[in-house]
Amino acid sequence: MTEVSRVHGIETAEEIAEDRVENHLTLKRGFNFRAIFALAFSDISPIVSIYTVFGIIVAISGAGFWFAMPIVLIGQLLVASVFGDVASRFPLAGSVYQWSRYLVNARFGWFTAWAYIWGLTIALATLSYGAAGFLLGVLGVNGASHNEQALVAVALTVFACTINIAGRKVLKYFFYFSIAAEVICSVVLGSILLIGYRVNPFSALVHSAGAVHGGAYLTGPFLAAMAVAGWSFLGFESAGSVAEEVDEPGRAVPRAIFFSLLAVGLIVLYISLALTISVPNFQAVLSGQVLDPIAATLQAHFGAATARGFQFLFMVGFIASFMAVQAAVSRCIWANARDRVLPAHKFLIKLTRHEKLPYNAVIFTGVVAAALPFINSPKVYGMLINFTSAGFFIAYALPVFGAAWVRARGKWVAGPWTLGKWGPLLTYAASVWLVVEIVNILWPRAELYGTGFLAWSAIYMVVGLGVVGLILHLWIYRDGGVHVRQGLLEGIEDVDLSTL
Image 1 (cartoon, rainbow, N blue to C red):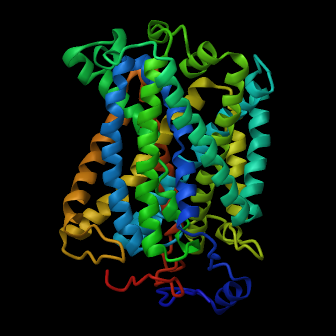
Image 2 (cartoon, helix red, strand yellow):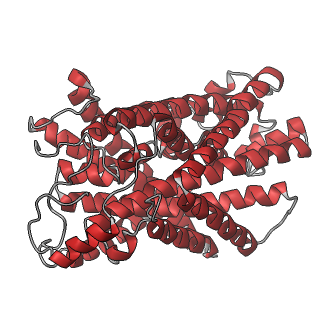
C-alpha cells in the first residue's frame, strides 16, 4: 500500500486508515510505451497544432511563417529532452508538478501546478468548442449560434469524460484510432496537396506573399509567428502525467515525451508546408477576407463533400486531444489532492473501484471546460484563450529552471534514462529558450490580442491568476504546511527520491 514514509506535521491515524481502506494513493498500472506515446501524440495532435494556428499565423506573417515552425520545434525539443531526463528521475503522476516539487520544494511545485491546471483546463474548452464546430459542419449545419455550438461542445465534453472514466483500454484504443485519423489528415492529405495541388511556388516562403520584409519582418511578424507557433508544440509532458500508470516508467516515459514531440513536429512541418503551397489566394487571407484558409483550400481543391469528410477526421483529432489533455490535467489535480494542497482534496482524490482512475478530477475539469464556451463576451473569452499558451510555457519553465538550479549546485542524480554529459548544456539552453518564448508570447501585440485592453490580456490573465494563486497558496499553507504530505512516497517503482 502506498503511504507517506515521513510525515512532518499532523497526520491523524484516522486519515491514514481512511487512505488505507479506500486506497486513494495508488494508481493502477495499465499503460505501456506504445499507449503513452499515443496519448502524448494525441495531446500534441498534428490536426490541432496546425488547424488552431494556421489562419492566424498566415494572416500575421504570410507564407514566411513556416520558418518560425522549425525554430520553435527545436526549442521545444530542448525542453522535451530536459523533461525526459527529469521524468526518468521522478516518474510520478502529475508531471511538471512533481518535477518542480522534488527538484526545488513543495511550494514551488504548487505554483507550477497552478499554472498547469488552469492552462490545460482552459485549453479543454477551446478543444471542445472547436470539435463542436467540426461536428456541426459534418452534419451540414451552417450558421449555428455561439450558444448552439457551446451546447454541442457540452455533449462532446460529456462523451470525452465518459471515455476517460471508462477505463484505460477504451482510452488507448480511441488514441490509436485518432492516430490513424491524424495520419490521413496530415501525411496523406499533405502528400496529395504537394503532388497535385500546388498553387504557390516554394519561393513564396521567402517572399512571404506580400507580408512585411527585412528587419521589420524579423522583429514584427516573424516574432509574432514564433509566439503563435508555440501553441503547436505543447502537450508532450502528458506522457509524464500518467507515469505511475506506466510499466517501467523510468525508461518508457522519457522516450514517449521526446519522440511524440519529434513525430508530431515533423508532421506539422510537412502539412503546414503543403497547405502553404496549396492556398488558392494568399492575398485574401492576408486581407482578412478568408478567415479559415484550411477549409477554403480543401473546398477549393476537393469540393464540399470531401471537405466534409476531412472535417469528421478533424473532429476526431480534436476530441482525442481533449481526452489526452484531460487525462494529463486530471492526474496533476489528483497528485495535488494526494498531497493535500488543493481545496476539496478529499473529493478530488477519489478513484474508481476497479480501474483506479481519478473520476472526480476528470468530472471537475469537464464541468469547467463545459462552462467556459458559454462566455459570450469576446473580450473575456479572448483573455482566457490568450492565457492558455502562456500558462503552458510558464508551467514548462518552472521545472526546467528547477533542473538548471539543481545542476548548477552539482546535486543532479540521473535516472535510468539520461542526457549524460549533454545534460547541463541542454538544460541551460532550454531555460534560455523558455524565457525568450514566454516574453515573446506575453508581449502586447494588436495583431495577436487586439488593441487597447486586449493587447495586454495575456499579461492580465497571468498576473490575475498569479494573485489568486498566491492568496490560495497562503491559505493552504496557513498552518505552515504541517497538514501537507512532506515525506517520500513508498511503493512507486523505479523512484529513489532520497538523494536530492
